[in-house]
Image: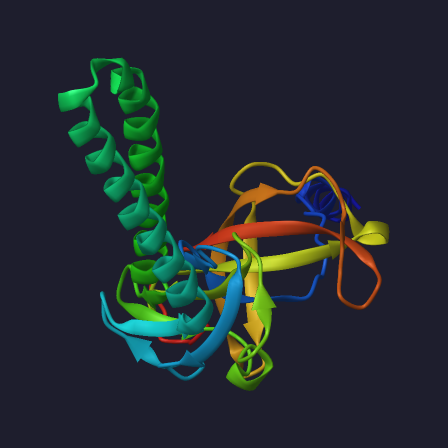
Length: 231
C-alpha cells in the first residue's frame, strides 16, 4: 500500500502541460514587400511566381504611355516658362519697370522644373527592381497585367529561401494563454513524421479575420534549427 501511495503521489506531481492544436505553415521571416510606387497600370512581369531573383533584377513594369505623355506636357510647359522668362529679361534692359515680373516668372520656371523632375522620377520608377535576392512570391501574373493599382498596394514579396519562421492561427475557442518562448511543433504535410520545433515569438492580441470567414489569433514562432523545407 505504501508503494502504491508513493506511486500515485509521484503521478500527481508529474507536470501536465496544456497544449493546443492550430493550423500552421512556414512563412518568410523578413521578406521585402514590393509595393506600387505610384498609381498606374501594370504592363508586364519579368519574373514568374516562385522564381529565384537576384538583387537589382527587373520584376515588373508599368504602362509607360501615360507617364510619357504627362512628361512631354511638363517639358513643353517648362520650355514655355523659360522662354517667357528670357523674353522678360530682355525687356528689363530697356524698361526697368518690367523687373517686377521677373520674380513671378522665375517662380513659374522653378515650378515647371519640379513637375518635370517628378515625372522623370516616375518614369524611372515605372520599372521595379528587386531590392534583394530571394524568391518572388506573388499570384498569377495574368491577374495583375492591365489592372490599375494604387500607390502603396502590395504586388509581391521577395523572401530569402532559408529565412523562414512558423505562422499558426489559434481559433477563438482554443485560445489559451501562451508564455514567452513557449515550445511549438509544426507537422508539415510533406514531412508529418519529422516535425519542426520552434519557440513562440509572439501571439496576436486581437483575433484576425481569416479567408474562410473565421477569426483566429496569429502566432509567430522562430525555428530552433535550420530546415530545407520550402516556404
